[in-house]
Image (cartoon, rainbow over all chains, first blue to last red):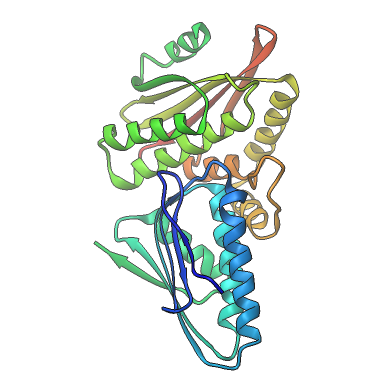
Length: 131
Length: 171
């Protein structure tokens, strides 16, 4: 599978899904003009990756990093869907996944969103504050 | 817009207008207004973020429900000692305005916990609609503002003017 790298814009995340490095990174702000056009390829890629891991015999270490500033309500829906896929990926026996959710220490909104994703999807997320 | 002056004037004994913008509603307009807010609102981080989020959801709402490609939106932010108000004025078709009124009335009738449950259920099990959104913008605005959304529509030329007014109390 090819690495999926999406450059950030003023209204969309930077996304880097790098299989070779074992690192998936989501950064920035998300309120894309056309949310399905932006997020559907990301979900398709993650679903393909899930199938790859189900059919793979080798152990795989994966670190997922979210460091987000702001996302609108529709982007929240896509983050829920992404978290559901990550939960399934993390449940695959040969995958050793960690998910880190960074939030500014004073940012109650992003911290609460991280907690909601844990509660709503069951995804094991480490909440990590930073200055 | 004459009507917006009239509406805003009702609050001027208690509120100051701290931001006002009239533009053709496009994605770029929202980006521009949000950048204005980021640079001009000098208030505490979480309150600023709350206002930023409400402004964005309101403007995205006007983009979705606009009456034509060159529709204008006016946004005003008012401030008093105890609260902010974010008010949008835009035009829409009759059907769109009725749908929005019904949707907002339903949202306003819910308690905080019912609202939170509806928001969560839509995010967990809802589908993206034909407009490319999940349709929880009003729920999010109410959850963030902790107030009812004041919405009114009235005839404006051959369309409907929609006025949405959200009050955000300063904790």
